[in-house]
Amino acid sequence: MLLGEHCSIAGGLHAAPKAGRWIGCDAIQIFSRSPRMLRNTKPITAEEAEHWRRSMVENGIREAVIHTNYLINLASPAKRLLKVARTAFVEEMERAQVLGVRLLIFHPGAHMGKGEAKGLRAVAESLDDCVERADAPDVTLCLENTAGAGSSVGHKFEHLRGILDLSRHPERIAMCFDTCHAFAAGYDIRTRPGYETVMSHLGETVGFDRVRAFHLNDSKGDVRSHLDRHENIGKGKLKKAAFGFLVNDARFAACPALLETPGDDPAFRRNLKTLRSLVTA
Picture (cartoon, rainbow, N blue to C red):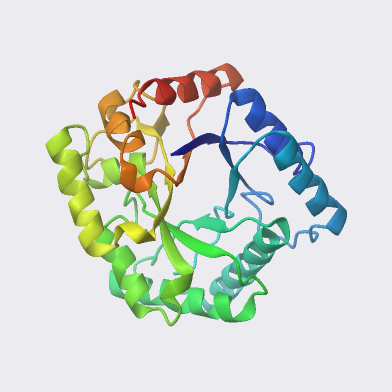
């Protein structure tokens, strides 16, 4: 795995690879815009994109991924909000294309009381619309599994499979596996048998070839708690063994695996050091 951390773009996009080098990252995750506002964002200039690419090379970061704005709900039943969400998502895709980032990670959305079936169909239709509108042919859209709080979809592997099956462009869609979310949703990977059972189910439903990235987060909540609260590696309910299984799984050796753990900069470095200490291969 290409291990790394979510890094801030405070100071400009080019600042994130510098932060990644300081932490010790092989890969980084960024927001390319504010994660909590849907207002129009200024396009990335050619100069900013070049500065970003140069910073990636100079700081030895092998891969970057982008996480979309948290407010985008591609399953919204409200027509106006859905239009806003799709427009913002197209912008996210095109910003990734300009930066040369190939993986765009996003939460599928919430059906807001309309039911899972309608929610999944809305996500698939939204993705089709965005793929057909965006000038972003090199960007792969990575569905992130969710913890299952509220009316969110994506907490079952079958949900992700359903979106793939409903889409006209399944070749453009992949998955980001979040450990905290999976555990909170009921996928218990704390033991070797449990890990193998979950991975077998993942392979049978989504397919290992679809798994293109990971979020490696311990969990404050217990299994099936549906609580999306990240904890430092080894300090939560998941414990270290689960992460040891993942970082040594040859099926995912080429995947970027990003920490999103809480804390200050020293905590980021400690978490990454902990993950690397678990690598035995």
